[in-house]
Image 1 (cartoon, rainbow, N blue to C red):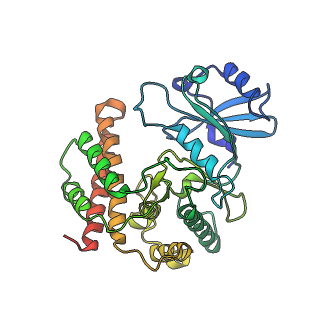
Image 2: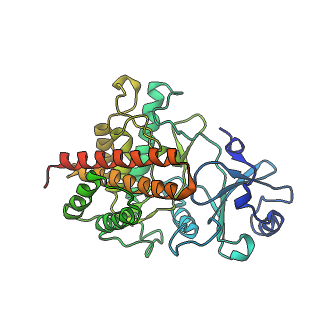
Image 3: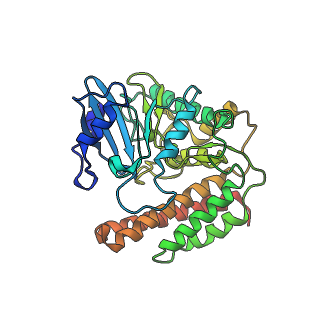
Length: 352
């Protein structure tokens, strides 16, 4: 789908002084001229994202949302830094063109990158493709994640980008705290899985660039080839253990197709062309030089627990009036479903 078709006019709550922006950019970003137009991408990005068209060229601008923000939230500067550092590696990213940290221009920091025209797959069952094409798309996604986790992050200037040790324990504590802050009712499986995760962190530690939201919807694929043109949405990226990244990427194999936001693969027959979870994990292991992954179900349980905590936060905000009660209850049920699946994964792990 062309980039333009993914956009709409800038929404009132995100409007800014477009002439001032374009005057600023025409003097700093080659290719943006006085004929440039601005539209906003649709969707639920936490960082508002805009398409700038100038002649036959496309540019993408991402900025922090308006209003009061937590100090570490919506850090577009970190997104810019990690993608700029990855340029020239085997991880495909858009070209970073300009970072503006002067809030006087748009009211917040923002950056501009090249716009990538290609395919974005939102239905992970890939119904529009043949079985062979489906397998090829999953294989290139797997190769891209393995390449990311194989990057020597120190050699590309990402010292200080994150704390390379203790990632899993910190994440369990962080999302437990987030869940408790938004708790609206009892979810028995959540109350069981949170302490289980805290006391059963697998031994050993690893460090790699952790994307934090690695999934097909956050990639632009070549219009006709099974090739990733760019990995997007690095808002949660840090330095940390790579296996939670892999487990999150594998969540579709652990939920049903009707699970919103993930689009599960449970129930697909082999002839559909998409590999099984075991085959996908084995391909990742081969590419990263692993013999096996111990306590794989722990990482799946963690990723489902994190999903449940996020959904509970949405549920709590909905009950406060930002969505209808019907939607709030539906999201609340999804949080319980994710928590139940997390506990099921924990039970498969077998540790008390």
